[in-house]
Image (tube, rainbow, N blue to C red; front, top):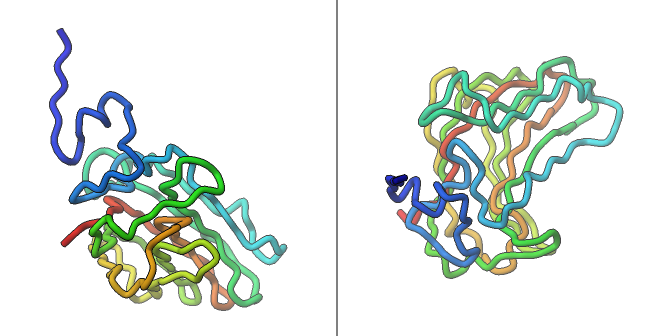
Length: 201
């Protein structure tokens, strides 16, 4: 006989590999906690500056890093270490999407979520910033927050981004987007991320 032990964080549906309905809203929705849980089963979307000013072979994005998790067994390691030329705002980033298909959208207006929270640690060199972009309406603009090289520290810290200043959360294309952005000449940076989630309080 096989028994499954579950809780809100690891419900039986997750243990059995069954995704939550796209329009269900648990009190805490862990977008990432040891693994990606975006409900729509889409792979993370990666994007980058397509110019030749950055050394893209020095960019690493690992969603199963086991060396320094805050909670559980894994965390996200996101690094861009190496000289970046002086073209302003070179970038590399990724997006986590709650969509059932490419080109689809999701309505978060009835979700009740008030914050997007996550844990972060690492190091950014001068001239590099970490940008968090939160739900983007199709055809609209991002709401975002940024962390500078002095904001990101070697110790885990929790960050909360308030969602209530987003006027329209219908037809959302991406739930969360994160990027390392060069504001000038920089050696980039490295961050660890864990427990990326939406909460209702």
